[in-house]
Amino acid sequence: MKKFLFIKIMAVTLFLGVFNQSCTDLEEEVFSQVTVDNFFQSDDEFISALGAAYTTLYGMYGTPGVIGIQEISSRHLVVPTRGQDWDDGGHWRRLHQQEWTSEDPATNGAWGVLNGGVSTCNRLIFQFEQLNNPSTTPFLSELRALRAVYYYWLLDIYGNVPIVTAFDVEPSSITQSSRAEVYNFVESELTSALADVTSAKDGSTYGRVNRDVINTVLTKLYLNAEVYTGTAQWAKAAAAANAVIGTGNYALTGNYRDNFVTDNSGSSEFIFAIPYDKVFAGGFVTPAQTLHYGSQATFNLTFQPWNGWSTVEDFYNSYEEGDIRQANNHIVGPQFDTGGNRIEDSGAEPFDIDGPPLTFTPNINELGPNACRQCGARIGKYEFALGATENLDNDFPLFRYADILLMRAEALWRMNAGDAEALDLVNQIRTRAGLGAVSEITADLLLDERGHELFMEGHGRTDEIRFGRFTEARWAKDAQDNCKTLFPLPQSEIDANANFTQNPCY
Image (cartoon, rainbow, N blue to C red; front, side):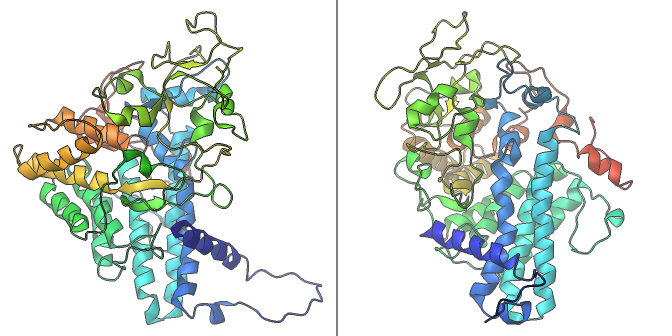
């Protein structure tokens, strides 16, 4: 039901995008007409118009997209080059090795998605303001808050970005802001929106920004404040997380897997989700990205997968024995079709000790160009329904309650390493994962818990930077300069605007 309401909003959004267009030389009789003057009359109509600002989110998971660059640049994922597959000019290997350039698709793709979201928010804010209608106040605040969410990701990934709040601005007049200035803008926009944005959590707010979403983004902003501005804000992070916890709107699901099944829109943990739909709202293409060609027979897929994204072996091996999240998040071992028969890979390399029978092994022989076809644990976190298309029906959790608990625990721990509440929160997450309680929190424990709990939810890079682990050497990757904690602005943006200065390192 929640997903249906959001998809309905998207459908009306598409209608609104075309209702002002007209054709000539038609003699059809017009019985009614929708115009700006007669449409914006009710809350439902305002909500429908808001939909365009949210459609950008469907691009968050693209190839590589915001989620992809956050995970593949971290210790979690890698995209090996297997012969002619996944070479693409080497940019997938560069993403793992943190040797990306200002012209790589990862850099340009994430920039385009996020700034596209900002631009659409600016357009709708302009249109709503022209109505001069007091009824638009909560929707204007929602749009400003959503724009601030897009800016949060821009702040995190690129740092020094232009702050644009007008729809009709002259491009050559746009100037760059410092990372600290962007931080202050995001904080101000989010906190000022709290009073007017709805506190409701129901079908009408699913997939939309409400107060809980704002407080979650504020938690993330404050948790990373030392990285963004040089000044830690642990107490603010703990308080913002507590504001979400205190609503009583959320609870850990009894089963970790329930958050990621095909019909997951009713999860008690979802604070802000992208309601993907295989027909009306595609883009969640994990089965295509990660599964082997032969895996088509495992799930009766309507397409052949691309045999790409895989888990880094060291990360796969970092789970404790008995952690149910390892088996949930990753696919390893012999692979079978729906009839229980072993799948054969006729293209298996002579050096593959498993031979033609399809077997996913955590070990990857090399990053490229000749990584073996069956090497690497595959992403299994999100259920692949039998007969699935390359676009999943599962909703994607941008922000989840388990993350709130871990963020509050971390903020409390950083202020007091012996904080009892922090220990209890971490142990709640561990208990659900089938693990025993710990008596002490360490930095390594926190980073591992976040990695194992939030794998493939788009937090890996940000977490590793905060813990000082992002640029260190690891498998098939040398240590990098700390300036690689920021991505470069796209070279096309630098070339087009003399006011822009490229980030250090590039």
